[in-house]
Length: 524
Image 1 (cartoon, rainbow, N blue to C red):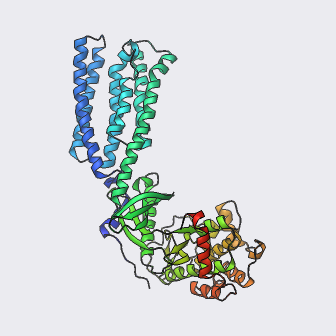
Image 2: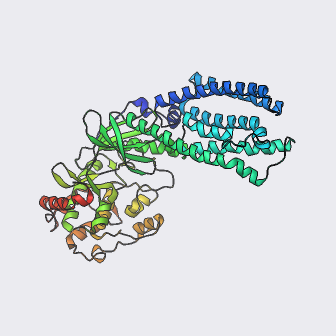
Image 3: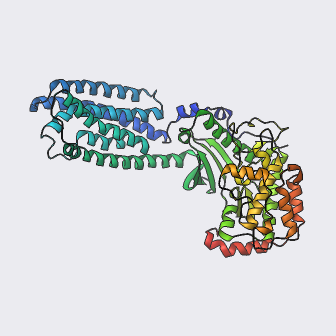
């Protein structure tokens, strides 16, 4: 029986999604957020002073403008600046809310600026000679003070820009001036549109730099260096240990990636992520990816660190190099059986065995070494303690449809380790033919085919020679009834080892292949 262990403090494990969102709300580092808070306070005081000075100067110069409008704008500006100043200074506003407060502040101040200056800049010749309106300047400057995501910056900038034409319409309705022509609107607003584009670019640059700083600092002892891949809600980065100078792969999920999902689905994703770490960490087969570390960063990002592999997955192997020799397929499948057997003995079912989750690498002095990846939807078999049996959403099927065992899609049936053997048979079929067992157009069509249709013999799907005894073993894995498949992964490994091609792919052959293709694959 495999003993389950926890790789992180229980207090962290018990955090709810709302706790994480409250705790972070942004992926910027804490010191940068503190700096943003200070800058927001500074700009509030600065604008408060400038607003008062501006009103005094208007009186001194004697601009003929509606005093009621100007003093109403002054009062609102004073109130808004003082309110935002004290909220930012209090320290009671969380990081995410601070940035949202900054967005609201930008729009409200833009409205105040529009209300206070539109009469002069749109209905008189004062703006002649000026390229940007006060609102456009404000839109341009604000992302430098309070950087936010590209999307939020765009929303706030557009909302701020719209305050000018809206104020013009309101003032015209109040009889303050005449409605500008369409050309007048275009002439006054195009510089603001340019300001929006520049503001979004600035925000993307500054916020992105902040995220890079956060990534470089937050992942425990590992510094993130380059993005390796992105999919779904997760990212995989190349990382380097600060003291050991050891490269690793760092998989992470950021809280903001969950914002578009409902609470229950988001918690399911996080629970699966945690379960993947725990399931993988307790397995000791050399053919299972090794986990080095796990944690939750200060910004709420879940991450775990695993060994960085040098090679390619089986999906890429067949796509780039075509159907594989029978001996090599036997060599690959036997290694996968080693990993799966240990998992099955511990009551763990992978449930997503497919070519992209089997990685072929150079491992130490060994070439053609298989690593089983991605235990993210691992499930515990009946008869073992199962605190995550219901992580699959109601009505949903876990796994990849093209490699799905019939019982995984059948209502009321609990799959066991033989479901993984079915999927492994599909992988062997793919390696020998570069063809899926069933070539369908939709996930449901795959499910129906795997449940009802007899798979075409391997020998009919490829022009390469496939030994009949190897074909028999792989086709036995594709039996509809789990009882007609190999009893377990070790029996499958034994049957694979007894086929005629079992010893055709030697370590010398593998070494020669890797030397020959090292340059093309950049894996030397």
